[in-house]
Structure formats: structure tokens, C-alpha cells
Image (tube, rainbow, N blue to C red; front, side):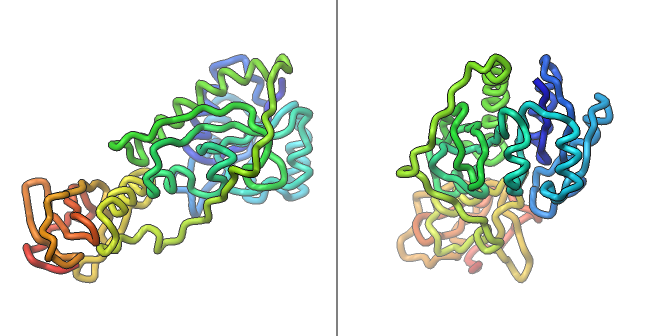
Length: 293
């Protein structure tokens, strides 16, 4: 089975590396040299050069030139893992088996942008790793394979990304021989349970101390590495909160944003509800007791 691979993030690299340890026939790769919005961007050309796989940079994958290059590879199936751009109709229809996409959420729920970040920021306790056959809309094609994943209280973007990656790699090992033999199922997504997450804005990553401690803590978890960090201002300078802790023992008569206690672990700030101990920041956050943020 001839596989054309499309991807440009760290998960794409891990998936391509894994496929190269199997009998999979990778006939070509489309990737990006750089990305303005993927914090986990990864240029796959290095892997391709090492394994003598034809590759092309495809900043616009729907151009005539790129489409013709893909068609020349004569793929039986296209794997699109880690690509934040919509594929045009002729690309979706190019391969005999279609295009298998990946979405780290429990489709049909939570389609759209930034699924790992939203799941953590919203405090979800469960998500899923989903492979599906792509069609014209966003994440709305028939499901090939889905595996639920628990989001634990101590998970952040780094740990959840890794858990999701390991789960997805195992799923690829499962469905790859199924695609080769033709013995696989397609499950139509039930639109009654569908929703779509919007693209996040810079303001979505800013801490407002009037938010509850739970919301601030979840935001810090969601935007931890490899992402950009939850930001706040202190004395006119931008800080990134990489790690926080909820503090329940807080005085009820303290206003949000006040540093009401400083302990060995870090300063404790009163929130709209409860408090937050700021454990790890960049640059180092060292306010004075009683200051307001």
C-alpha cells in the first residue's frame, strides 16, 4: 500500500518515524519549512533525506504544482497527521482509500482548533485520540478508530501530548494492516453530539486574577510547554506562568489580584475564587507581600 504522508508538527515526526519501522511504503511527504502558529512545528525533510523519501514543502497544499507532485507519487492512501490547513476536494479524492486524518478529541465532540489546549483549559476529565476519513468539513468524516483517554489532575500540555502520542502510535499499528487488507470499518459521526472549538486568540491566554483559581490553574496547565504559557503582567512586564497550584485556605475579605501570602513554593495570589500559588514562571516572579497584580 502506497502511503503519501502530510505533516508538520512533532506528532507528525513521531508517526512517520514509527511507520518507517514497519512494512509501510512511504512514497512521498508534504511538510512545512516553518510555521507561524504551531509551537510544536517540525520540518520532516530531515527524516525524508535520511531515508531517501521524496518530499516537498507545501505552504499551500492545494496549488496545481503541489497537487501534481502528490498525484505523481500514485498514493493508495494519504495520511494527514498534524496539518492545520484544510485540504481541497481534489486532494481529498486523490488516493484510492482517501485521506486518513488525526484529531486529538472525542469526535464528533470538540472538532476544530487547539483540542488539547481547550480540553485542559476547560477542565475536561476525558478526551480521545481519533483517526477518521477526511472530507470537506472540519473533522467531520467517518471515524476509522477512536480511543478514549483520561485527563488526570496532574496532567498538563506536555504530559497529555505525550499520552496522546503514545496512544495514537499504537492505533496506527492497529489500523495499518486493516487498511492493507481492506478489513476496516467506517463509523459515521452523529451530528447530534457535534460541536466545534474556535481558534484561540492571544487574549485567551492571559490570566485575569478575577477568574477562579480553578480556571487560572487549568489555563496554566493548558498552555504549558510546548505551548506559549499563560501570561500576566507585573510592573509592566509580561510573565509566563508555567506551573501553579490551587490554594483553598484563603481569607474571604481579600480582593482578587493581591499577593496575600508568600511561602517557600512561591507567592500566593487571591483569585476571584480561592487562591493560586505561582510555582514556576519566566522570568522569575518575586512580588512583595501585599502587592496588587
